[in-house]
Amino acid sequence: MAASGWPTLRHLSARLLRGVAVLAALAAAPSQAAEPQARSAPADGGLSVVTLNLWHDKSDWPARQRQIVTELRRLQPDVIALQEVLQHPALPNQAQSLAAALGYRAYFVSVDAADAPRRYGNAILSRRPVLAFDWKPLQPADDYRTVAHARIEVDGRVVNVYATHLHYKPEGGAIRQRQIDDLLAYIDATAGGAPSLVAGDFNAAEHAPEFAEFGRRFRNAYGALHPGIADDAREHSTLNLNQYAPLRIDHIWYQPDAFAPNQAEILFNRPDADGVWASDHYGLHAVLRMTPPTAP
Image 1 (cartoon, rainbow, N blue to C red):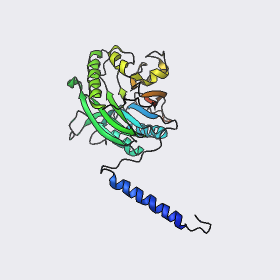
Image 2 (tube, rainbow, N blue to C red):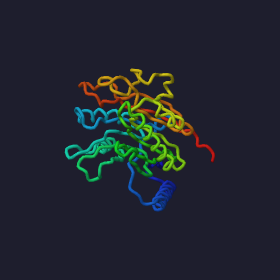
Image 3 (cartoon, rainbow, N blue to C red):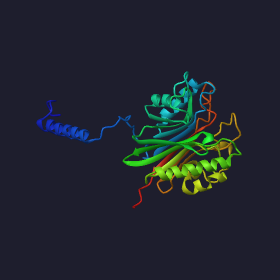
Image 4 (cartoon, helix red, strand yellow):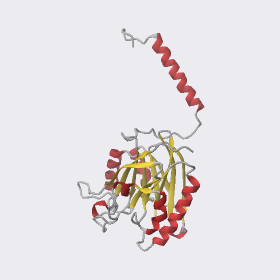
């Protein structure tokens, strides 16, 4: 502003030029659905990721939902992987409800038909621009497991996020092994050269034998920052100790040549003021630093 409080001709000309540049950029941009406006990244520039098994509509879902929204709003993670997401005529899709409350975009996947009255599956929520979504059912087909895939943009770089929920029986290692093999093949077919991370409820500990090949290609964010811990250590359990014996079965895995872990912590490991637990699992939060891309 000039001393008189009125804009000078020079300021008006500069504003006009900026406006023309913005209009030109908009005209050149490809037409696509509008994305929710991304909030600022974590202060250290890392990629913030949360995974949580929602326990579908068990217990007091409205109270649990409020607690989950409050914590996720505080953290503002870039992406959220959800398992045991449910919808039926009396219950709006839980992932969509959380996304609406947080201002995120949600992508829900299920082996249930799109027009089925009841659908159950996994979801990815993102506050970052989403470039593509995809999914596939995992083998064996009779276990009704899926993997969801979101390709997101993070500060000008493309990142693949995969979310899954593996077979649940402790003695089902062979089934989980087949699901891991299918998951790795899917990552190879869809990653497109961009770095990848995988989050979800794996229903087995980090060092379970069925994850041997997976562990050669990916690193466990929580395990990397807490080396030497036992998979069944109480203070590191992701199973709710109010209901289960301790075991860390919820994981965020990252590609070690593309990310380095800055932070990993357990979430929702205390009830709220009314004694309501967020889920029968605790959540897991990790912040991953993106390392400079390697030359081709």
